[in-house]
Amino acid sequence: MMTQSASLITVAILASLSFFIQMEASDVRPRLKAEIADDVGYVWNPVLYRILSTGQTPLALDWLLLKFLTSQDWEHVAPGKHAKQFYDLDLATEVDPAFMTLYTAGANFLTVVRNDNLGAQRIINKGENFRSQVLHRDYGPDFVSQHWPNEWRVPFIRAFIELFEMKNLKGAAEALSVIDQFPDAPDFLKSLGKRLADPVERYDVALRILEQGIRAGHDDRERDILLEKRRSVLLARFVAISNVEFNKYLAMQKTKIDSARKQNLFTTFVRAHPQWAKDPAGGDTYLTEMGRIETRTPRDSVYIGE
Image 1 (cartoon, rainbow, N blue to C red):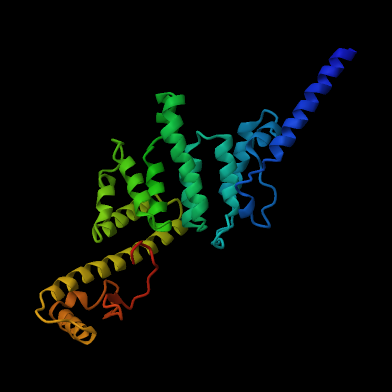
Image 2: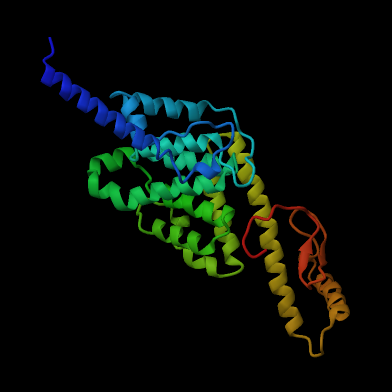
């Protein structure tokens, strides 16, 4: 039979544990409260999740991963909202921060398929912080080589998100410069950060990033979305180069150029240089009211500065 002192100790421990759980539960992701969709429900605190998994944390993590992998909800989320999968990924990366695939496949899925760009940015930034600050400090080389192969993929996906979704050239350049540090990174991805400063070369950088993403695509849906982005980038690249060439042509003129004359010069320009009369998709080019060459082929706005 339990003695009175043992009973008091047990009660004290349970009271302390109850207080701790309540304190943790009161911290149910205050940073996410404003973003939680009405149908998401409760967002787990990671410490409380570990406690309630009663020593079965790996199994609890597998459950989160299974939910993510089997989700059939692939529609784009509304601006300012997170996809349901974001909450599972955010929790899973807190429970097991050394699980690389959660960061790479998770962020890629959120941005490409669900269009949850803020969620993808948060997940991949969390992965980059872990990779750069914790991984090599707290884990041995055997763990890194086995569980973090192609470590460069974390800054690569960060560069993709910053460039295409956040329209952040500086952030993309910073992420690309990190890739240069990895000997096993593909050569065609190296030294790309410096090229983002050039208004034409940045499109070549974008194409290389997309081509790598298409190669590594996890399913047909992701590849189709990336292929459509690639088509838009090719059109944007054509427009950028045609404007560079047209401005060179204008600079050769000896007289003052007003709007009417500029339109006439554009007609003369495309007649003399027919490669700028139609875009790669066959759409006609024209001169906008702002005096820039544009194409009639519809495309997504995929790049900063368009």
